[in-house]
Image (cartoon, rainbow, N blue to C red; front, side):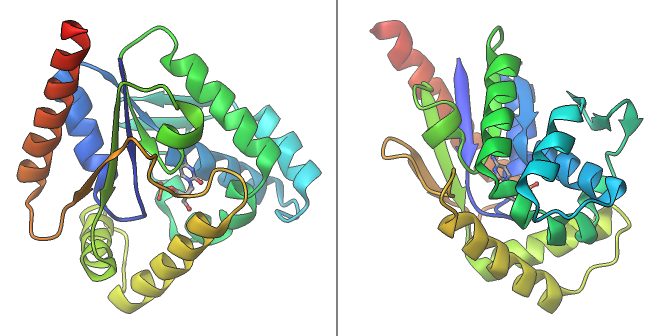
Length: 221
Ligand code: DC
């Protein structure tokens, strides 16, 4: 079974998706981490990120390992480094590169081919897994999302300024929604969940209810 969770930056997708995967005993696939790894690899290689062919070559050379709580890029632990604002600021040309998106989607399908997965990103229900049994679009107001992102960064001992985060987030929302390849969009058959005013535990329980309902439907068919 594949559960897709898409939505804008800071909607609390990552932590709730991870907990949902744990509760279900499913593998958790953080696809944002994959784009972050490619961006970091390009920054390290000091290539021009807006050169699509050069960026694609770097993407092809990336060996990304996603395990519980750790992300490795070419065997180097980059779990913290990929969360750095410098990486987030540089991601746009990478996430917009259709050839890199194709490569990432191929890898995502391979990872989920032989196991139950909760996969989280922007295009999981629309592009990567259009036939997924359960699709969720998780969102919240921009202010609520920025507040949560600041807290998340502070929890990881990374300095964060609310206004800066909000403006970066608005820019990312705009970039994510307007790109040609794999734009941020709810699949027509996705269940939209707006999490303003909900605690993480409430969101988790709500999502568990949705997934169990879908699982039950699948068994009855
Ligand atoms: O979810 P996140 O903030 O870690 O994602 C980092 C960036 O990667 C974000 O700018 C959007 C992009 N992304 C994407 O284009 N497609 C995905 N499936 C996941 C993330």
